[in-house]
Image (cartoon, rainbow, N blue to C red; front, side, top):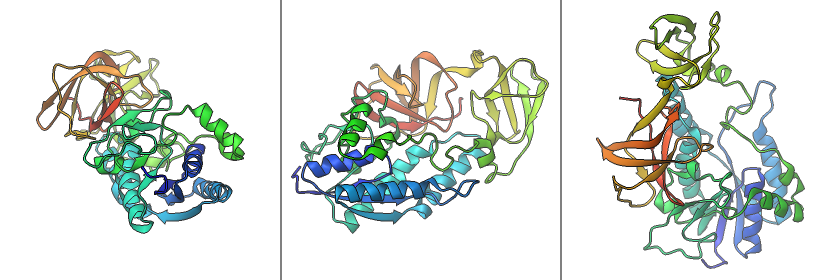
Length: 366
């Protein structure tokens, strides 16, 4: 890609997007920084981390000598991500808002906004991922499909969260730090005067919850609907809960009066029952067959039911070999080994060697 092309960088306030902007500028691209506001709530102490992030972004852009723009996607985030998040919890599912944010906001609304508002030729993010078109789209071909590839840094790889990205968006997206290791990104920040970014603590967890207790947070939006904890082995009621939305598969339940530890094994939304299993290694917590909704493939792929692929449903977990069969407009995934607490509502992300092929939403067990 011509180095005089204009690129909009999604600036988050972290070191990865800051270094991405720096690398692009040093390569000779015409760079603009764009800060997205996706959430509009202060925590219980009246502190909004987004305000600090914006200040950090302003300082980085000033240091790099690039223009900064702000765009408000609070309404879009609420309608396209957060409302689905609440609906899922009310229906006993455990959603992944980070995937939906990338799908609907960063690589759709933000992508379209930058191309329309700034007439850019590409966008860039600080994600740890690679593209078959190259770090700076140097191998871009309009008539060729692009592949989403795992980052060189396996520990930081974020292709899991990009598994819902559309082909047209991926074709015009750069991942400047995707072939780098985190320690090297921080070193580049330090060497170029971005000391605060290099030493800034990384954010973890769901962005709009932050450090708050999840059950306290979700209770602000979903009314409690009490029900029974029932032992999946004996069928006996062992306690009461305040709502299925507060619990996820595999989670430990600290039930008063119970000496042995129980874990969530299954939910009956209609009956408001949470079935619990005694012990973290109880067989009911493990699965080898996964059913999904219709998959999203990043590029046109033809699934071979006799071939081994790789599967994960949490980005921190190791990949597991699997075979895939297209069935009932969805997928039947047979794992090579049992996995604990595979959770309906989460996403089955599929890989073939270094390529992330796409993902599909996990359905409740049949």
